Image (cartoon, rainbow over all chains, first blue to last red; front, side, top):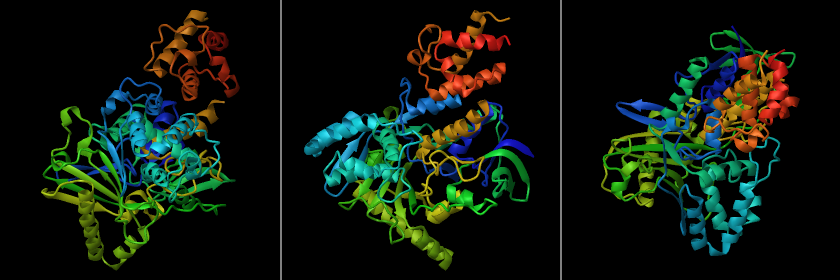
Amino acid sequence: MKVDTVIIGAGMSGLAAGIRLSMYNKKVLIVEKHTITGGLNSYYARGKRKFDVGLHALTNFVNPDDRGKPFNKLMKQLRIPLADFKLTPQNYSLIQFPDQKLKFTNDIDFLISEISEKFPSQIDGFMNLLNHIKNFNETDLSNETVMAKDVVRNFISDKSLVEMIFCPLLIYGSAWENDMDFSQFVIMFKSIFLEGFGRPEGGVRTIIDLLLKRLGEVGGEIRFKAEVTRLITKDGKISAVEINGGEIIECDNVLSSIGLPETMKVLDAEPSYTPRPGALSFTESILITDKKPRDLGVDATIVFYNNRPEYLYQKPQTLFDKESAVVCFPNNFKYDHFQDDYEEGVLRVTNIANYDLWNQELLVSKENYKAKKELVFEQSKSILRACGLKDGYTVAFKDIFTPTTIKRYTGHFGGTVYGSIDKTRNGTTPVAGLYICGTDQGFLGIVGSMLSGISMANLHVLQGSSS
Amino acid sequence: MLSNEEVRAKVLDIIADIALDDDVSSIKDEVALRDQLDLDSMDFLDIVMELKKRHKIEVPQEDYTKLASMKSCVEYLAPKFNA
């Protein structure tokens, strides 16, 4: 078999890249090692209940009449009407630290008033930071790497305010511990604080279904249960891909979304550099309850919970970090009259976790691993209480995933969610014709991943062939 | 032989499909497209790609600036349509 481009991985970035290339008559084959699409952002069903994986909320919220926003631009590139997502905005989110809370909505003025009330000495600095961010071109692929906390401290002197601002941005999109590249910081800041959170009707399925429908319309092909076993090079250039079973697919180029270290691992040549896997992974408890969170005293959409003066976004020395969490209440988006599409309460508690320790538990025995998952679940109930959820609910169903679950489903070394700490911003690798899109190109989040797939397809395949 | 009017109509068809949310009926030929429509560099790439796909017309990267306004589009593309 011979195609123009093999795309490895049918996650958001691979699907978006596949659509772009197929739109312009490139013969594309997407190879996906699992039986479903979505990658890091996927879904599953248990009984009659449907669950989302990854996505808590879609960032970069746009109203139907907004123009020129990143999400509009992406959908325009894919020719998918924005209205098809049926986006509902968040109610509000909360950054909850031991001594202070900051609320934010999809309107930045709300956060500005929160900061001027709670950190009056910092408001001028915050406004200047805001200006700096608005004028910064974060998607310029030639930007130098600069540590974001160094930049932000030039504007904000209060240590806890810096920690509070970084908390949601780190946990929703940093492969690095405790800090991030300033360009990535600006991407996250704009997508979360300036544009905000929303949820498509039906959750992550809706996004994937729309991408798949579009891919079908333009004639892109996906092969499931197809794991890449070898990337074959000839004279330093990519020439073919071998998939499990030994089948060889010849191609002019490869766009790989499986991660930089993971891609290098299947390269037939000795890689000239070894990108480092990241350290950060997560556990998540999903609780299905008889009562909805609003009936239990919580109307926030997402709570960024931290029980220390500092926010430790780092690999914990324990199975999971009990002192911080992201708690998502999908029932609490601002649906018309709060009529959400769930029949029951859905509570999701995500903790930073240590892959190595979870893997050790699994090696001891499956029973042992299951017992440790129970601890995560028990802890999630205390965290929910700390977030203001009243007792008096019954858990009808629960599911807990760990870093080893993430490893199993994504193939990411170390069960990382945000991939390697070495990104390749322009998508190139030491091998001609082999490009990286998705997590390790460095645009993170759902909107970031689609942007990554589109821009890498444009830059390396479409522009390359049009001139 | 396509007239300039016909070339303009073909370019307009492409722009209408790309600038989904814009009203393209009132485009002023002398004014830069970017100043009238919600188009960025990614969208200009799409105009180039659509010209290739629909009309087999190649626009090399160094000539992208010739697509700045409707007037310059027609001037640049008419000979290519009629080649």
